[in-house]
Image (cartoon, rainbow, N blue to C red; front, top):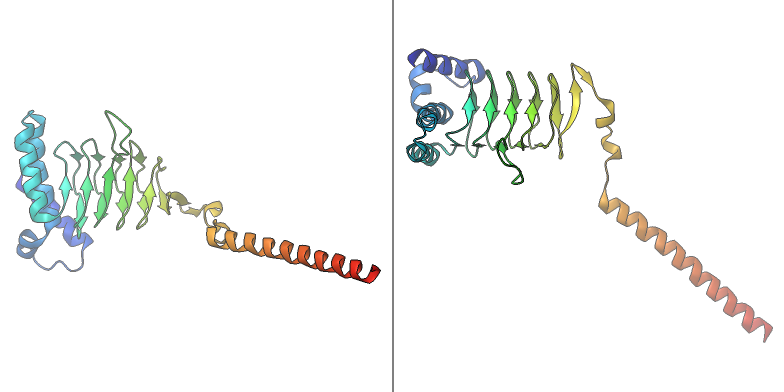
Length: 220
């Protein structure tokens, strides 16, 4: 147990340049406290002591601002940086060397039963505010950009950004079709173009009416 705790603290020093001493990290890093509390809760959960597991989970949530369901399976060297608002669902499976930031949700869509939360494979990074929803898989060595909403599987060695999340880099190469930001739909611009077209048609119609009236007066 102590060896695993030491490994968790070592990850903090690798990932966070603000970390100074083991004593400081041990006492002040809420992400660590949430992970350690989860491991205790998960032990009770596996023994079908669900009530005790949930109580531990909720106490941890109260003190850390991080909600991890006791049923979630989390691997080694998991790092939560500035973890306020992180939510991890019951059937989540998280591999080794995974890093997530504040505001990340690993949740369900509300339409599934059984396995309804994401599987995060090894060496994945999920940035601030990202939402990964449903029983999907985020492949090894992938990155999810801040604020993205991911609803479909992500291949390994990929970078995903946007709403909905789209792969923009895979195996170190840009996926150009996803980088044409100038071609993204703009409803305001579309509406302005429609109004401009309608104004031109109305102007032409008014001009035709005026011309017809002028010709009628000339004939009289």
